[in-house]
Length: 274
Image (tube, rainbow, N blue to C red; front, side):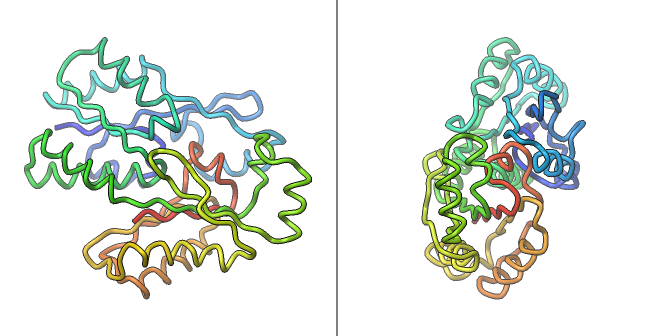
């Protein structure tokens, strides 16, 4: 079976290469110039360009033709393709995949992760592990649904700057928030991003990430926990150490958040998937 995903998955390159995953890139427009995610725009370059830009970058889903090309490549490798993607409630990526499947034909299963960033990546990684264990495609899909339904993705936002650029928060409101040092924490619920809490101070807000993990369970020794960060490696590493000490996970996967979700999270954002 060949697994395909999109560039919003934020999986490290070595994992993608290890499991021979095919990636469909999304596109980003910054200051009127188009980039292909992961091809001609690295995560580091993206954050530099976003910081310098007076307006928010614009992201767009892959075209059906881009999917057709990847699906054909996947079907050359295997008779079965499992295509796992960013939430249909956050992007039109899944819809493009469905359109491409109609034109491509073949045994192509499309799976909506109902999440973003490394939440997508962790479901891709789960599918790879299940395939290695010898499960059939239909069994993998059912197990992925169960894994998706219990997954939590919680995000700390350092700044409201990107929300202001996007027109969702007024500048006076941002000014008041900055005076009060309010920090929002959001989570992905039913495929949508929703505000979980807004707290005064960074330490309290980041503590929410750990508290949400503890609400789910206290021992993660049988589970991988994943962190993505928006150009704030030091804070991400500190969070990883706290998670290791407090929850003893089997592994903590740490990587950068890409443009698709990073555009909205902004510099300093931290995401935990568990």
